[in-house]
Structures are given as structure tokens and as C-alpha cells.
Amino acid sequence: MNDTPVKQQNTAAYYAQAVASFALALTALAVGIAKLEASAWVRGFLAVAVLYLTTSAFTLAKVVRDRQEAGQIVSRVDQARLEKMLAEHDPFQKL
Image: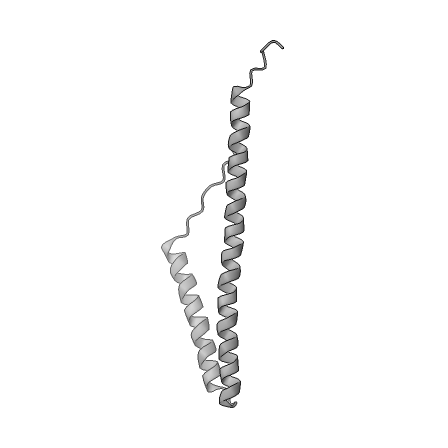
């Protein structure tokens, strides 16, 4: 039995929706910070915090994706080794 995982492909619509959602959220947050009734120092601090949070989120997503891909590669190599051993094994061979 072959349990090879199916490679998932994102559609163009899904990609566009994700980009639009991110852009809308970032724009709304920027407008909210700009319209905030606070001193420039407070708005600047919030803007820097948003940028830091955004870059941290991208980094975390990349690390999680890389770890998942590494796990898939290792399991494929192990599966290939097992299939090779099973193909070479002759149950009727005399000891």
C-alpha cells in the first residue's frame, strides 16, 4: 500500500484572498494608528510594534513550514528505504 501524501496546491483565488486580507488588515491598522488621539511618540511606538509583530508572524510561518517540509522529506527517505528492503527480501530463500 502506498501512503504517499498528496501535494496540496493553493489556487490563485486563495492566494489573492490571503494577500487582500493581509493588505486590508495592515491598512486598517495603519489608519487606526494615524487617527489615534495620542502623541506622535505613542503612535510611533505602536507603528514599530505592528511592524515587529508582522515580521515575527512571517518568520514563524516560515519556520513552521520548513519544519513540516523537512519532516516530509525524512519520512519519504525512510519509506523509500523500507520499500527497497521489502522488494529485495525473498521469503522463500533458504537460510
